[in-house]
Image (cartoon, rainbow, N blue to C red; front, side, top):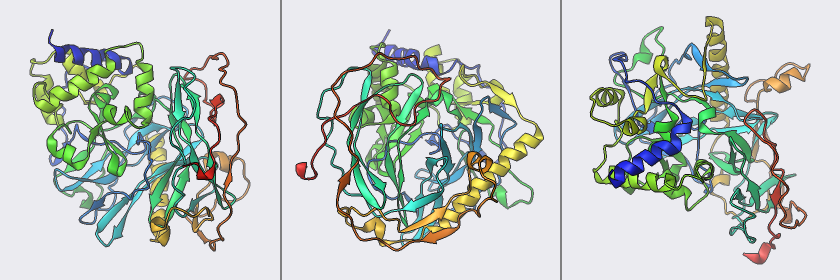
Length: 492
């Protein structure tokens, strides 16, 4: 067996736990003028890299169309908190046009709710403002001045063991001040991925998103393929789009890329040199140098598979150099490839990116049928998310906060945007729901002295690992931390 075939086999074995193999595709053809893609951006609510840089979103040269009418499929994964999250337009560098990042079914992270992004006009074009996972009991979005530069230079004590990862320190807004929270070592949790604290850029200021536990990819729901419309069907009265082709986790991880400049994941054929010049990087090369939530978890998950990381690297090199087939770029190309009979079983697992719902198999995702009333209920909830996105657009006017020097310790909100009550809040309140997106402005407070969120020193002792499985809710905050010594302000 050749090195590349062996590496691809090891890649398939390393990811095989994510999903079973599917049958060859039947010729289920999308509507004329609708190109189902097997490459493109990953919906940012499904997965986003760890954002360490305060960078604006990407800019498109022209205005995107209005969001299209989108109807959820009548099948969804089983689960208590599976939600339909709407899609959005994304600028495609290849087509020089917009493609539609389809909505998808998402098992929401515990104690989190999605705040969708939006497009806003700038001097240079139309800029994407990303969405984020807010706390479920969060009552408003606080728009802040840029936080100070990080004080974190990496861990100052050795890792307690191979089952730990380092969580970087971060500035945390508290009582109108930025307080420094030191980094710490955190133990891995089987079935859970740690999303670290970060700041999201908006034209009005920066939004702090604290760290939280999220599900692994195979348990996050059902991602659908992006599409390219060759004609504007959305101008036809009564037209709507209903996603039908799901993205398989195995195919996703086999060809996953990061675009660090815009903090986005992409999947599929981004192996060419033009993408490298744009800054696209394979997820495993970026994650081996910087913290990436997915790479960190799956490297640990495959710690007993010595060929996992090597297989990823060898497969990438072979596809880049043309000695191994690259994944198809459209559903039509994939159908022809899989039905051609010229690929091996291991190659099929890595090259089959999308599958129709009728043939979708994932051992961790069991689909259940929805009634027409349940579909409309999910669509109404998605409309509420779009209404909040529109409220963000109205509220997030440009301010000097996004260009301010990162030396101020003031974290007084420049402005705020009220969030509608979550289901949990509504159940615990007798008052009427607040209007979506009501805007409240507050005067800027003077800068305060530097403070820290102090944590006691601990000896590097690890308590016995207790049982923790995917049916349990993870702790809201990491409960077993080994804290590095606290640094002084002038220690950097």
